[in-house]
Image 1 (cartoon, helix red, strand yellow):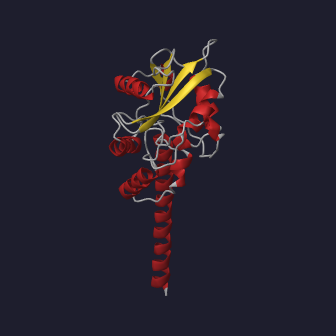
Image 2 (cartoon, one colour; image 1 turned 60 degrees about the vertical axis):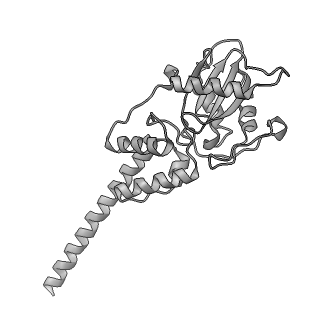
Image 3 (cartoon, one colour; image 1 turned 90 degrees about the horizontal axis):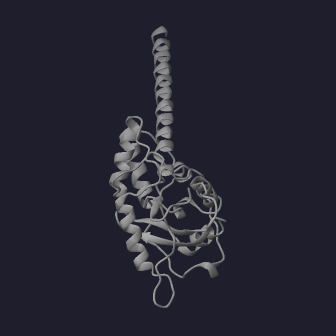
Length: 242
């Protein structure tokens, strides 16, 4: 559902990256650069506020337990909304690296004496909730199902500094960026002696999809090796016959 008081909901998205620029008058005037991408939280907040179930939204850069984006939401009164519908709504307008990793739903935001949003207090609250691991059932952790997925889970945990990574978690939402993506793909290709285009990760940035690409590459590699052995055998027979 679209959040209960004090609950964080995590989701992952598997759609290709698409860039969009929202009207800048909606942006709060600060940017986050250390994720390796140009991120303007105001654009994400504007996109969230277009959802009919969202009354207010604030996007924060969280550094504990890892560098990531978190969205804090005050939901409108009315019937509960499906979180999957919200994730699909954002995916239509935002690139992968701008999709928040965590969602904190509150009845109201903390305010300063001036009446403006107290981002410092909201950041502390959000980090506490993330460390407590308060996750809704709709964002359930999905463990690895095979050896390749297990290897990738360990690799992502190491590179992202995350305690737990599910096979459907979004690499960029967990704090991944372009440089980490290159390192991850390089380590993976060295492990399995295959080549997979970096764009695969940007198009479907989760372990389940990457592992499937690894399996496909290994199958193609084995078929190529079988063909090479067949050709070599035919050449040997031809040479012997001559």
